[in-house]
Image (cartoon, rainbow, N blue to C red; front, side):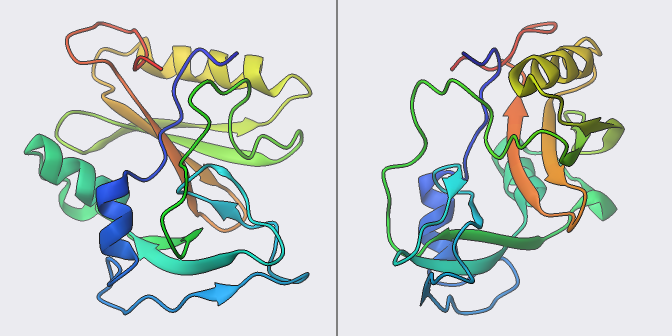
Amino acid sequence: MTTYTARAIPPTALAQLRAVDDAGRTCRPFTADEETAGNPLRCCLRLSRVGERIALVSYAPLRRWAAEHGAEPGAYDEQGPVFVHAEECGGPDPAPTAYPFDRPGALRTLRRYDARGRIVGGRLLEIPEAPTEGFDRAFAEAFADPEVALVHVRAVEYGCFHYEVRRTPGTSGAPDAP
């Protein structure tokens, strides 16, 4: 069981991205085949499968978080490619037992942001053989800093956004409730 909640792209944002993405491009769905299956889906936090309709869209997670919280990330706002289901899906497992995309040996960057949407630190994590414990320790370390409001987990290889974890409002270090 995970201690922190990995947050998928919210349904409202997904509906918008499936029409026009955060770079202003029209969504172009395709059917995953042997070559394109296995991509991390940010709508349900699992890997794509052969035969599924998916889309590669540009997503600006910090921009959307900042709009929701009245923050201004300035130059820290960035957008990048993410895979999503082309149509609405069931979303992530409501009671995950592991963190998404937690392949031992893979490298992840955990970027920490404050309530203004500014980077206040980060950490490189090589996913250990016990991935849940490694992520739990890294998130606990991040949220031990009272300035940290949220953490973005990104793949080092491509810099792609995987998911975010948020601090519960009004707490000094507790994770977002599952």
